[in-house]
Image (cartoon, rainbow over all chains, first blue to last red; front, side, top):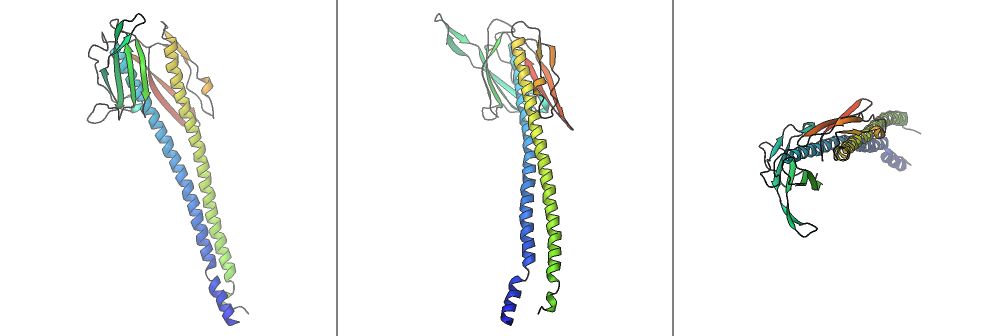
Length: 164
Length: 126
């Protein structure tokens, strides 16, 4: 009888404490999960706004450079007038735009081969010191075709890609 | 026969456990309420972001179509962007088209209770 009682006492000793600790650990895990979810959400919204501002800053910078090049006589043949630094750019994001003449040839319906006055623009975040945009860090790549009819030529978007 | 040192022990343990469970459960509910509130706030924020992007693209499209063939001004209606308690940007009425070698900045602002988000873009004549 005394052996049995001793076993029961030993087995039950501290059971409530163990249960309370297990409960607290589970509750802490749930709380940590929820806190992590909230923190992740806040970080995501911040990143979303930053990406939007960066994207439209690059878009605006490249549009401005396209318009500037349009004012150059014989755009696509003459020196393109880049890089352009926009610091601060739109939405407070510093942007650098590099451009280069990238002529191509095309054949008209009558078979005549003509040169396309294309200019390729790349927009990227401006750094200190400023470094040229590359395909690796470009936010927007655009190829614009300028109609060669003198100053203030028409500009046609041949390609436009947003990388990040 | 109960031993003297066991008298009342279960009651004390239960009381302590109840207090601990009450505190922890309260903390869980408080955290859950915060998470729910944060989730709602994030949903609204994302909807506002979408409204700003939609406004930007609608404006660029309007400039492209309305300023392309000798047009001198453009108009954009943003009223359809009002969703999830978000007040959309003010619609644009007869804004002058940008010149051929310049761009025009356009700023959009969306608001919802206690919050404001803005976005500025440049538009260019085609």
